[in-house]
Amino acid sequence: MGADRSLFWDIDHLAAATGWAHGFMAAYALWGGLVALAAVWVVCGLLARRRADGFQSLAAVVLTGVATLVGLALNQIVGPLVDRPRPFVAMPHVLLLLNHSTDPSFPSDHAVIAGAFAAGLLVVSRRWGALAVVLAVLLAFARVYVGVHYPLDVTGGLLIGAAVAFLLVLSGLRTLVARLLAALARTPLRPVLAGATVAGSYSRVGGDASAASPELPAGGRHR
Image (cartoon, rainbow, N blue to C red; front, side, top):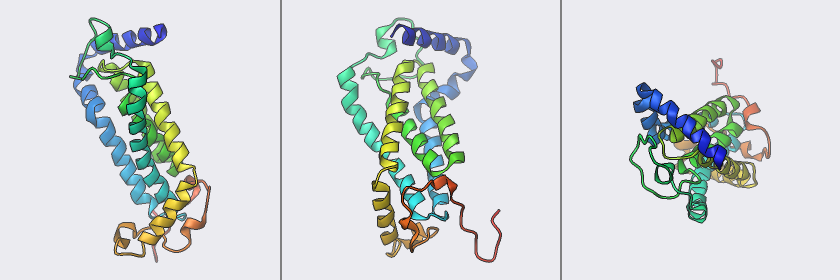
């Protein structure tokens, strides 16, 4: 805990010396980081519909979204059990850039969501997953920078979110969700899933979604 507080003060002093970044960091810590991650998630969902493994990739994207909710629900249990005070409550003279409630500090809700997005999207696409990891780490840092979390709070949150995402996306649920999506593609919901291969694409189980190539448009060349 001593090292955790020491690192928090180092980041707090950095925040005090970089007033030019306060507006961006406060916005990113509050909503910008989650919006950016959600946008990457949507892009991965759109691209997953065109992949050769069809509904397997789309199922991984869906379960990534589910993981963010499961991780957030888990946080509501862990937080009160640990009951760690916020840094601005426990220590005087903290530079606080956001108005925040005094609910438990560990683990960070934002970091849990970010960790789930990053881990789940890494399974879908290495390139987009890597971008999600960068955005998630920046969000975790921003939550400390604005004074509402300790480094351990956001690190724990990232790990919890990532663990939940990996457990869901790499489990047998992925095949079940893929089969459900394939069935839905034969209903009036087909336009929502129009890019995915309707027949046979969910039969691949446990494959690396990131290794599959998008289907090429008929009569054209993939660009």
